Length: 406
Image (cartoon, rainbow, N blue to C red; front, top):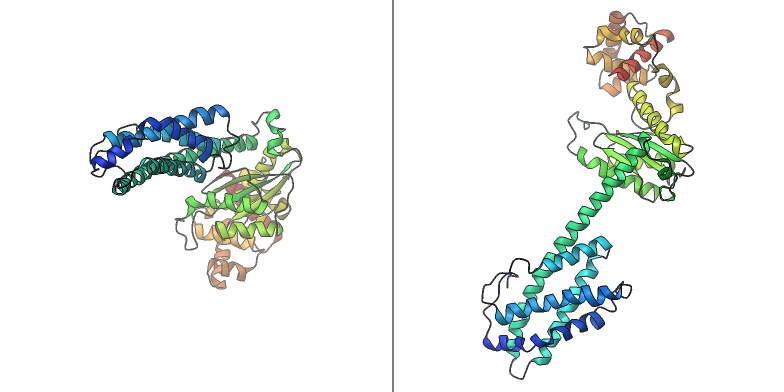
């Protein structure tokens, strides 16, 4: 039987149900004082909730059933608002954090109490009428359980979205330095001893150079990987391209930094980049976040392969990328090849490979002779001597400064 229709009930079935109409309060009390008592968390509920709110909901459910059975007509649909009381209570239980399975168990127990009441008033020879009422009871219960589950899950989803947005706003304020000092010192953030600040970057393309179809899943997967690695929910601000995370204290994940990187690679992309900077105190977190972002930038601009980067790994690149009155003139050294992306990427990969031509060729999928020809063309167009330390230093500084300007 569909949950939104009534079968054609016999007069005997209606008469049997009518004997329970004067017992509504008694049956509701049985539910709230006996049937629900061993449900986890029920004993801790305030008396006014058990005797008022829950009892009123039980009476509403009983009257809904009896009204439809005793006074309803075949193929009648629920009236607008029949399930509103159940939806309202389901939303409250979701907000209070009561598990859904306990909410549904309370409805099923209420149904069992009503079924016993119907059996008690049944007379010999009314077995068929009792079976008719069982069909209706199951059908109405199906509609109630559907309404309750839908509302509970919708409310839970809304609450979870609100918590996520609140947490994102908190992390955003923490990273940009706008979080008030009293909240910085709040114990729930666990930042009294400083933090590890992580910067992450996800490649915009897949291995074939196409836009990644799975990019929208990366923030959720990265968050899950961070939470697993550190054994707690890690405050993070992530999007499709990467972002930041703040790990309270100076915890090292199982397997160390390499284990964390491996976990992120499995979850997001083999080409994920991760920078880690230590903030000694809560007030140092914004600066640490900026440093971590800059470490990622110079590692990418300098042609270093994806992976874990610390400031010590890119000290020269970091220093060369700082801007002063000479910066524009150094960046302009690569103007002659600015419209030749093949030459720019060859130069970037060559410098990131520590001038290893065969490694450069392997990474770019080229023959080593092609790499030699491109390097010669770069030297010819720019006037830089890539065979001399001074020339390679100028080329690296130009790459870093041009990337920073962009």
